[in-house]
Length: 301
Image (cartoon, rainbow, N blue to C red; front, side, top):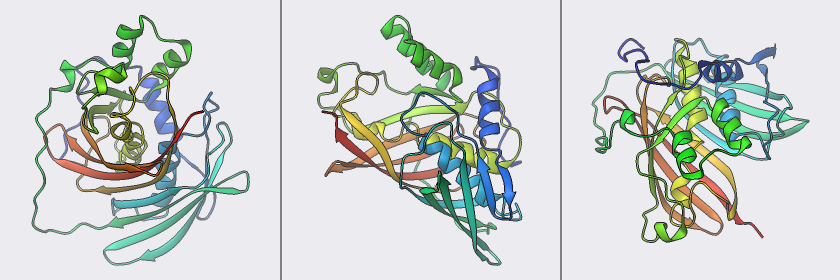
């Protein structure tokens, strides 16, 4: 982690206890060899947040390795909605321990039913040639409003559920472009979105925690790009949304408590499914991760 500078806390941040809750959420209990248990906040949500399950599953996978090989990819399926407030058990299969690569398969079980599975690969790291797509030119995060402030400005004040969510949100999110509030404003809008994000407080120095925190965050706004041409991002939803599958590739070391730009786009939506892909850049323009996800979009009657 030495090549990436530590967190800059010179600007305003949200309460650090939200970041501490995220670290606690990712700190699984070891029940048995290769079996871990994660808690799930008892919140007023229809289902457990998918990024939480993915992040916890990746922690479980990482806890069965020697810790010397960083995660380089994950591939996952969301099979059933998780129930908030009910613990989730993660069962890890040690598929392979090679000289360069380590592979783990994780099954998440809740109330006796499989709700999620994930395959993760860890790579020792080797020298090689390099190239990357450049980071797009966007405003600095400090020049953009926090999401909660932007919502308050438009709504006057946040409804209690949104206010509570804003207080507990472990990531500071800032949209690069202003939010649109009506379908008329969305006419001709491309299926693209971009946000700056960072954890609202320090997350410590364990690289696995930072990787799993970014995995958590990667599920927060990615499907925005699918919805943008159809409906405003904040307001009554015309669709019941659910993540179907999720894949990530990690390219370089990074810190989740430093700003990263999440550039998102949707190449296609059809058959009640929308595909989204994202590129994550650190503050210095280095491409740190790539993401692809498909989501389900069913019209609400």
